Length: 504
Ligand SMILES: Cc1cc2nc3c(=O)[nH]c(=O)nc-3n(C[C@H](O)[C@H](O)[C@H](O)COP(=O)(O)OP(=O)(O)OC[C@H]3O[C@@H](n4cnc5c(N)ncnc54)[C@H](O)[C@@H]3O)c2cc1C
View 1 (cartoon, helix red, strand yellow):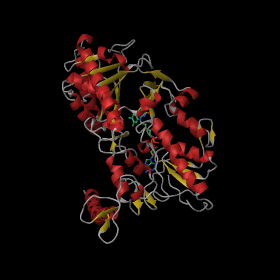
View 2 (cartoon, helix red, strand yellow):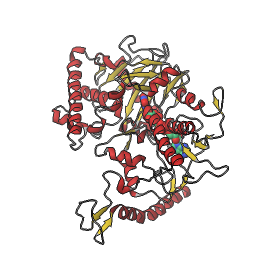
View 3 (cartoon, helix red, strand yellow):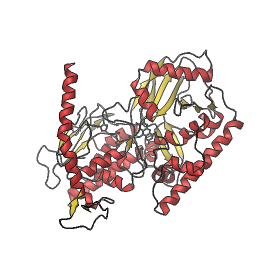
View 4 (tube, helix red, strand yellow):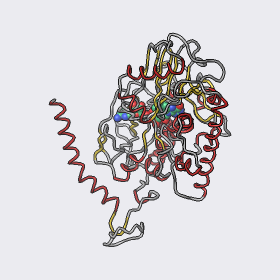
């Protein structure tokens, strides 16, 4: 969010607030502003639609979700606001029963493993999972240092290393975090706040209007519309923002900020991992996989961790569709995004033929969403890596002058989820409203942010905070100056590369 006229009323024709991005958080920010009487905003989105990472498409005649697919966190004491909206707007959903995977696990050569064999492995993974949750609670309670989930598994004494244990590990962690336990913060990702606050249940959205239907309905509540089309001049689509001239904002390769961002903001932004989570959809002329109760999900346990591990059929939501999808994450997503789809299809058919026999038909269609290569997203959602503290989320969302930040990645509790985006849009707009309407615009400076030491003695002794006088140096300033000294050189090198590329 950018508030060009933070301290002065907006002049004719100039909006008070410009919102970059019409995803869940941007639309919720605009809605919140509107509810507080601030209606002269402008929403810009690079694409020709609202929704961002809530993005459905038609595949083999059925509506499938390339991005967000589940309402996650249902059935707890507190109600997930997205679940409230899903009910209000009659979103078509189906309960996901993840309980039967121990009966639906195929080993590397494609043999369906007997329950008597898989069950002890799932039980051990359960025990390890519960242990990591309890260890995390204990570390938090005692203010101890963070460790990775893998470190916790090592302490527990069981590190998944067989194909079966690795695919179970993928289900417990990568399927949610989109990154392996090796990089994920124990203290902040386990137990997952979404499930703690809102409950363990998950509902799969399969609605021909798309998951984004709830966002359309929210937008229609404050933007002019004609039936289902939003026709409000304050929403401008196909507008790619490439320059922000202001005090600064998040650095990306797409948007240039003048002047540049302060060092602390750039560092914070790059500390987080933008994960990649890919659902590869396949259409077949006939079903050859088990259907019926308890069969919706099945696992393939390859020796290479994360190789086409997690499968789902769509028969529960679209009977007779003959559609399967397989979920991959992280390095496998990156690899698949870079290869032609026919290569991916060949790899997938090899895996399926191991499980279901040589005579199964080839997939007639394949869809590989490319979130990583998409320059407006650069990945799927953020994961909380080891070494990043809650204070970093404060830095992530801290305004810089008239620039305010929102999105799932600014939610310390619910990052990575639709409800995180929803709540962050409201929260950021409320901070901005405080400023516009009530003059409470106090900027957070780097030294006020928890954990950021402004002044350090020149001798490098890290006793932050109290040093004054000539022996001291403003560390943040020193780092900014250091980075700036390279910026010109990097720009020149990049320009030379681009020129060379054009010439060839
Ligand atoms: C594959 C995948 C699976 C997921 N699964 C789930 C799930 O099952 N359940 C769940 O709760 N969440 C899930 N998520 C996460 C969820 O989709 C996101 O957390 C949420 O939609 C993010 O909303 P946002 O408003 O923060 O960002 P976005 O939706 O990314 O919105 C940002 C908007 O900014 C626009 N934009 C970007 N750059 C520019 C520019 N330079 N100029 C103009 N506009 C620009 C983009 O076009 C976009 O519309 C998933 C995400 C992905 C990708």
